Image (tube, rainbow, N blue to C red; front, side):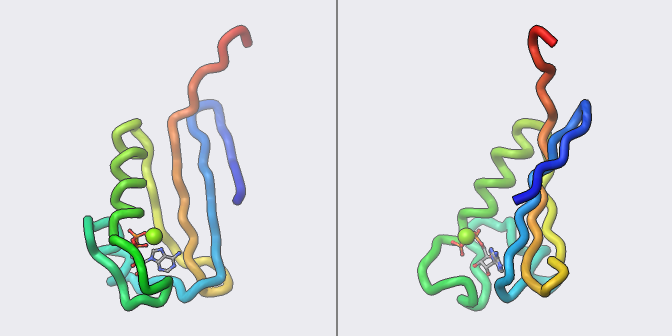
Length: 87
Ligand SMILES: Nc1ncnc2c1ncn2[C@@H]1O[C@H](COP(=O)(O)OP(=O)(O)O)[C@@H](O)[C@H]1O
Ligand SMILES: [Mg+2]
């Protein structure tokens, strides 16, 4: 996982080497209960990404999916930075 911080934002990036997602899959991936073709495992609920997006956007952040260089999935979560106290 990589972390990049500016004065206003912190971005967490997680890249994997799994099957990745097509653009059509990326566009549905945050839908509640939607699951792909089982490439990431047989069990699941289709809720993981929708819960992540709900929590992150409730806090004013964003979540983006893109292709990792090796063909896997690249997930970026951008959050508002909180001002440091005492700085
Ligand atoms: N790291 C990943 N690589 C490829 N596809 C993924 C990945 N994470 C999620 N997906 C796709 O998005 C769908 C929804 O993911 P998620 O909301 O986490 O639910 P679940 O993991 O329970 O299926 C998955 O079923 C899968 O098709
Ligand atoms: Mg999941």
